[in-house]
Image (cartoon, rainbow over all chains, first blue to last red; front, side, top):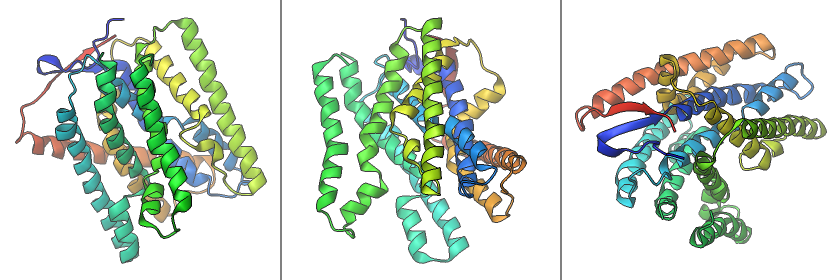
Length: 152
Length: 206
């Protein structure tokens, strides 16, 4: 199979259509997961619970899909990825995003609760869904080695 | 994955991120900082997520045909049904939501995710609408911001236990997050324009 996915050569950023569509579906799914998760806080015997459970169950693949897209792009041997590039470009970019959003959620937490302990917890560990950024950074770092082996 | 070095590397990762944290946490006091870090960053799940990372690449290397798409669809359907029925039955027994079947690193979600991935890949699309392209580009900021809009909906008591409120809440959260993400992305682009030249984008199909 000719693989021209995101070659990154000649300064051209090739995008892959089906990965973009998966990203869109993942995005629609993750919001639905979290909205239905709130519905599932209602009693199990409530009328809405089975519907919320079905919708929630249909959308659980959202975050794994995001990780699979990253893997599909980062482990592609055709893409010129080096340890330096990952450490100097991709990881700092996600790191800055993580710090920025930890601060935003900590500020919101402070505005709502005025509780320093909860605010500091959010500032250091992030809001509940930001674990995805920590995991992605970990995957990027792992990708430096995996990419080396896949390229052989 | 036939590379022996890669296999040992994968096993090493599994040991480092799964076996080691799970083993040492039994010996740590409940207030130990290392233990709270292991829990907070879900270190023992890390190898599972690395697995998804590798799986995504592996699925791009598979040749795909109609039969494989059907197989992927059946797998995704089975995975989804097990998640739904498993969660419902466990929750009824517990009397509250039981998330045992909703763990990201389990077979059922893996089936659902890989099935969806293969089906969409097998569609062999040649173009995407501008709206979908935009949502694709905004997916990370939408992910980052949507809990704020969901929190606002909850604060305003707009989430009531019926299907209409569920639909309205979903549309409001998604639309709100998308508009915010569009503005956020615009600001980021404006900031980046000072540091590097614009990158030309072209679409390709495997």
